[in-house]
Amino acid sequence: MAASSVALLLPALALGALGLLLLWRARRRPRARSACVVVLGDVGRSPRMQYHALSLARRGFDVTLLGYGGSKPHDELLSNKRIHILHIPEVNRIPVGPQMFQYGMKVVIQAVYLLYTLLLKISPVVYILLQNPPGLPSIAVCWVVCSLRGSKLVIDWHNYGYTILGLTHGFDHPLVQLAKWYEKFCGRLSDLNLCVTNAMREDLAKNWNIRAVTVYDKPASFFTNTPLEMQHQLFMKLGQSYSPFRASTELLDPAFERSAFTEFNPKSRKVIQLERRPALLVSSTSWTEDEDFSILLKALERFEQWIIDGANLPSLVCVITGKGPLKEHYGQIIRQMGLKHIQICTPWLEAEDYPLLLGSADLGVCLHTSSSGLDLPMKVVDMFGCCLPVCAIHFQCLHELVKHEENGMVFVDSEELAAQLKMLFSEFSSPDNRLNQFRKNLKESKQLRWEESWEQTVFPLFTHT
Image 1 (cartoon, rainbow, N blue to C red):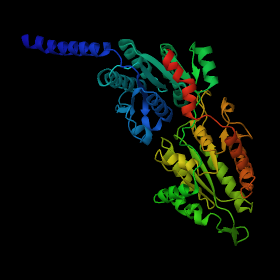
Image 2 (image 1 turned 180 degrees about the vertical axis):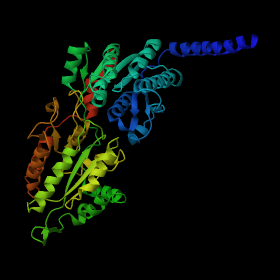
Image 3 (image 1 turned 135 degrees about the horizontal axis):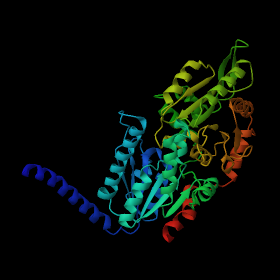
Image 4 (image 1 turned 60 degrees about the horizontal axis):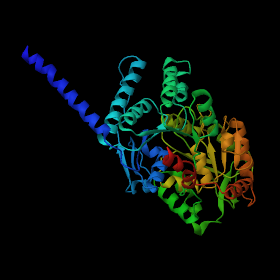
């Protein structure tokens, strides 16, 4: 009897002691000019939150950047002494029981890890800046921590989490409806809200009763044109692993800039001399359901057929960067296409190499279709920072970023994309071609960089809340 009483008493005392410790930790006063930037995802693949952390650090904030490990963040962030990166374990579903049970257990475990880290591993901060999505369970957990510690909760709305979940389960699924209710209810608990488009700001106000400030994604200063010599160095580096870069290395050597190249035309069965290099096409993706890359692949097949038929078009090197669940699926399709005049590769690039690639390209392609129709693709923002024109698939608020026939072109299907590629690259050898006109328009637009935009729109909010 005594033994069983002790067995019950010890866990109770342990829990009580833990509760007192958490309460003591929670009530400590936050350090002045301190912030925790939270993303329940790969920190290295969350550029906007990295930019927030850097901007806060430049303004004298001590910043903890909390999220999953995996991809390497930008060197500037790693070398900043005011920024401390703290990783939490990534939680996978437990493959036991019904789907709802698996998802529920994952959320509970994530909540425990996040609550433990925020209360026991991080000193109190003035602001918790949270990326949404994913907001389940992070919004509720961060609100609890802010309530205990007197911190202010800032949510940066990139999209709606329930709409992403709806792509997989359907929008009438009980799990999706529960996620929508949670996101709407908990989103109102924040002290300050940021969002990525005016369309999202209006939707938050109208349907969720949440007031937000639009903070457009802007390119960081390192997204710019890549000098020819640096292009050559990049291609030499990437050529060690990817054959299309090896084939193109000589093209980017400053000593061979205007070299003549040969190409076999199967229709005329002759080798012809070309005074142009292959065109470099770039796209980036997370390889998820909201980007249908079959559209690009079908357009490239059509482009290949035009070359075979004798059209005056350059060969293409198509580089698709990124990681994600559907990469192997599309990789198998690409390997079976058997293209002769178009080389496709799908590398994962280091953070410092990605801007160099965009700054070396002739055209970007974006297949991002927003699950909510209210966010904008950051990949296009980065491309525009490099003055790289874009062909982008149409969705609801794309016009806030891509201006058709001004800084790029908008398409709706593979046939329209193929026609745009043919039109743009048929003028490839001409110095006053459409692509160069788009580049000129991008240069003359004098778009703000992230640092300037953040100083104007975000910093005043952090000093007056």
